[in-house]
Length: 248
Image 1 (tube, rainbow, N blue to C red):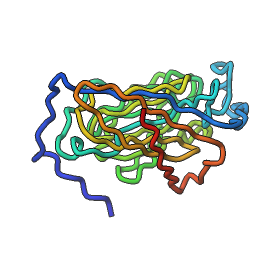
Image 2 (tube, rainbow, N blue to C red; image 1 turned 45 degrees about the horizontal axis):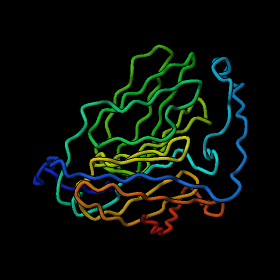
Image 3 (tube, rainbow, N blue to C red; image 1 turned 120 degrees about the horizontal axis):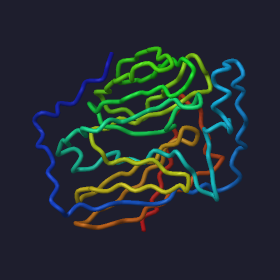
């Protein structure tokens, strides 16, 4: 049975006051990261010409910092009290070099997801959500963009290409826009946070989820760092939560 969708219409839409704050930080990686392996794309000749570097992307560490970590506000009094205007811009997922770009991203519920195919190959988009309807759609070379919406919050939704099994992406859908993804230097930043108490979560496809509590005062900027390590690896079907309270 599908989870019940929480009624939002009776909530007041949040209006920015100019007193919003922010949280930023770095996702560290302690220890020796797993080796990135070359992907054999030889099964599809249309993939090889576009790939100078064909390395796995499940764990990307640079100078002790972890990329592709989804950072988001998991809960908070303000989140429960208000609803938030859905972005009119599109979230974009491209297929380039027989890879999903970006690997990890976020969007709001109800926001348009625009899917492109910049490859010579035909792809097959197949998300595997738990709380949203599943769909499966082919997209040929030069095909029209596919536009979809996810109407229920869900962290995270895996997306696969049935034609190319190494292609994976993950999207977090939230009722608000307070999320970010750590870049190649492990850095992230979330702005526009109304003053209040929050639980901030960071999610990685291999190492699971961590939580931290933070208080944002009017116009305040806080720093919040997290650390993952190889021992935190978990099975994809489970959820590993490690509480971390690294508030600076």
